[in-house]
Amino acid sequence: MQNIKVVLVEPCYQINIGYMARVMKNFGIERMHMVAPRCKYDGKQAIQYSKHAVGLVKNAKLYKTIKEATKDCDKVIGTTGMWYKANSTFFNIYPPDKAMGFMKKGDKVAILIGRDDIGLTKEELEMCDATVFIPTSKDYPVLNISHALAIVLYEMQKNKLIDEHTLHHMYAGKPMLDGVTNLFWNSIKDRKDIRNKKAVLMAFKHIINRANPTKKELNAISIGITLRRPKKGL
Image 1 (cartoon, rainbow, N blue to C red):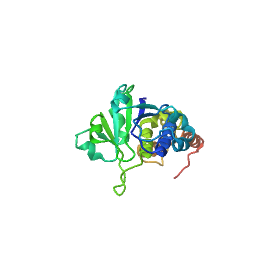
Image 2 (cartoon, rainbow, N blue to C red; image 1 turned 90 degrees about the vertical axis):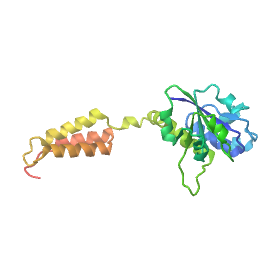
Image 3 (tube, one colour; image 1 turned 90 degrees about the horizontal axis):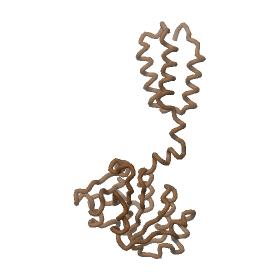
Image 4 (cartoon, rainbow, N blue to C red; image 1 turned 135 degrees about the horizontal axis):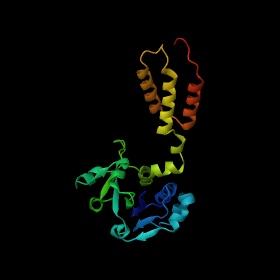
């Protein structure tokens, strides 16, 4: 998984700094980086709204420029709520879920989060290797920066986090799916009352694959198939 460095560019509201610290903590980011904050970054409100992520605020690393903050990174990803800023420079623009394909395993990636009020400038986006744009309603297209950060970090880390929560291990893999399909085939292959057995088998296989069953569900189905006694007619 990529080594992610979140860089807040000239934040001006303590509340947003606090909320972004919480988001970073939620997604396992261990250090907060800021370029020239325009408020007391570790002030009362920032501390209050960071909750259990207060350590990120108190230990934030400060820089004077974006270049200084990203010099140790392999890729720099800008964020914008106004895609045409980046489009006018013919930049790589990705929704968050597609941005992963732009990065290589082992890359250290800087995510630039723009100012609370005006975001990143066109010139700053030109410094980036790619730009992430989150599609939203045209009636109110610009997200709060803490909300945008949450979406970007989720998309970048979701596979890792799902693994950590062992959700993948709940669901049946191909060997189990093949096993229950074979059981089903064995239960119908000698049935004279089923004319097109291959079509029935294919329908069963498609339904099982679409259902994405858990291991427990598939075990229950397997037991049901094994115990079922063929009847003389349907």
